[in-house]
Image 1 (cartoon, one colour):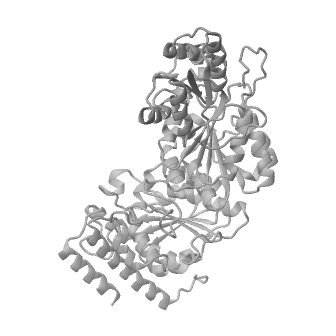
Image 2 (image 1 turned 180 degrees about the vertical axis):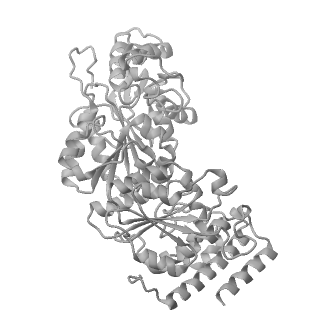
Image 3 (image 1 turned 30 degrees about the vertical axis):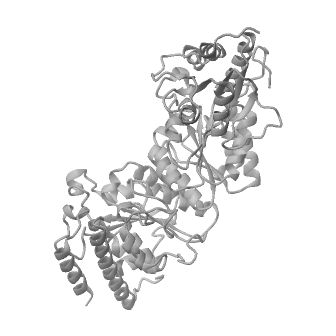
Length: 282
Length: 322
């Protein structure tokens, strides 16, 4: 947990390496399974790593601890990025990732809280995570507890109206213990968000709904650490972090390509991708 | 219970009163109980609850999708939310949230569908909730309960509070008489035998239970002894009671304030045809949007009356000479 605005360079370096190895494991797993959503997983990885290794108060040995921070992955199709992060954090064995989407594996294509320790709610259909995070943050407030709620949404999924119902209620109930992180990779399944259904001016929308908003580079772990350490940004206001990211981050031929939303790399592509990700950290 | 509805001047009750009274009583003993509403405080009769426990009544405004998600999050945070709204909007608007956030996620949330069925009468088909049993019973891990009177409503609320898991309580606002004795014990998944009979079984729930009992009185006058079951739990269904009814009485009439597609009648038929096929009649709204009229008018219009139930039974088994 980083409590100062001075970020520890060694910690940043450690998390950066970890994020790279989680990306590599994610891609290897998708290759092995023949299925996955690599674009949005690569864009979310730095956020997930920062949260699970430096921000969230969670204990892999006590996944049901009533005082744990709640993290909700609203973009449930990035399940493998969550699984890979949870496994590296010790919630279940890393080797189990090899069972991803195999028959009867507990690692479904979208996360199931009844099977996977560390998962808080089942997602897959979009626009579900933020309402649940609002309820969790409210539960903490009603019980006078200090644990917090975090939700990671895609940007395309903000086209779902349920998010804005939830946004309104979070501000109304002054949930400054709630943080939404928008993975603003600018692409949705078929095209750019702005071509599909315009989201901008996105920060203004959240502000108009009563949220305190900070925009960051979602691949700059130092910036992410600093920003999370400032929660709550303002007393009595819910927190919104718009994390500017790239779909397929870390792999040149995947980056910013809608086609890599759920394309599976072949052996050659995998080799190139793994090499590029190695080079990032060395 | 042998009383027939010929017993005039029977006292009638709005089950929402029993619901609110019991919920407030339970809340006084258990501070984990909270209520979530969609601007439905008055229509769910929760004014007194709100006055007594203002912080524990969470009003999310007119936003059903968020309401269900907030309920799931409150349950995730260790509370026991009763999520209350007019049944047509609570169930239809937020069905994906009910499936994913509550049932599939196995969250301890109690959905309370108020003013279900045809209760909103003249307001029209937008406000009728005659598909909710079918929708909710199709979802895995969902318990669906339709109480028949205030006695059962109170007990269902109490059982819901103490039984973990997602649950749907369908609470009517139509006036109903008391059909259960004081010592009645509601159990999830157990039909209540309200009248014994060997010639035919009348299976009903909710508002139709009192009418089925009255029908049994009419049938007795024709020499037909009807068994009456209150099938208040639609899922999980009391399969044993259904199979016993088919085996021992040879004919079944179901009656529900709901479409005939996929509700109580459908649930009973699924068990009957696979275990002990016998002639059946399924009474309900016959797959149409209702015309204009009060709830009482519409129940009569669709034959959901004691006479209508008795006639359906007589068609199946014929009059018997005593």
